Image 1 (cartoon, rainbow, N blue to C red):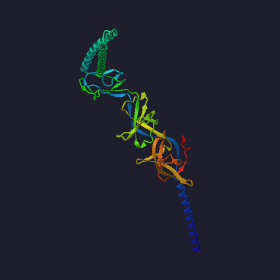
Image 2: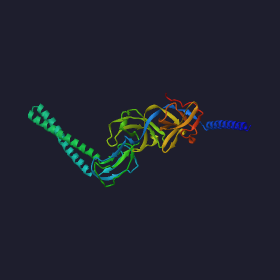
Image 3: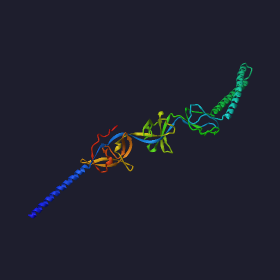
Image 4: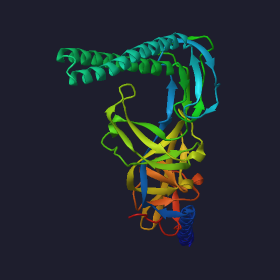
Length: 372
């Protein structure tokens, strides 16, 4: 009797333990299923984006000149100061012209002397011709008169040319503005002795501006006339769109770059000569993955995203390192690390870790595939 009771008690205990184990396993399975974090996902899509590079360029004017004298001498007048607006032909400075003026006066006197002799021989040749036709003088006398006339005419012409050349030289002592513009720095002073190597001042007109852009030689096969160029402000906004108008056939030996020139037309932007601006050279368009800005996490200077990976209806959050380009609206351009069709997690990324179970809820249709 006692033996049968003991066996009955042991059997009951075994059944209770079996039921308890089943209940614990079910509870653990239920708890594991509840740990999956609900997340919004978006299918990564391709979008046609610009392939471009940013460079520091220099604004230069085709109407910008350093004014240097063509003669030597002491400055006797300085009629402008830095910042003055001048008109084309306006007198800026005067170099002492007294010595050159004396030369002009001497040549003018010589010219008058030659003219008097030429006028006399002009009358004389006419008189000799009439006498020869009347048979009064010989051919030899007429020939001598003609030779004298031709010699004095040549002497007079030479004197006129010398006087004009000297007067042109005299004009170089008066320094004038080559075009409308603004006077720059005036480093010289009244009384200074200046030569043809002395910079007197500068004259700049903020018109016919060009952006000088140097691109690396490794991009030499990509550059061409007509390529789009964007002038960018400090906030990254495009303030002017233009095109490459000049492509240098040579490589700059100091910078090891290829010079591109693009005209700048926006007068309202008040660019100044020698101003540094950011220029974006657009190489072309290509399909690239784009992802929302908020889906990106940063850690230790690296950029990561989470994608939902799994099978049989079970998903895990997998962390992927990505290489990002610029931005388009509120999206990053992805240069590497993702491909079209990946299921990108776009919400709750701050609570995720690599390998954490997730429950994708979807996030609407993928981004539009522009231009494809």
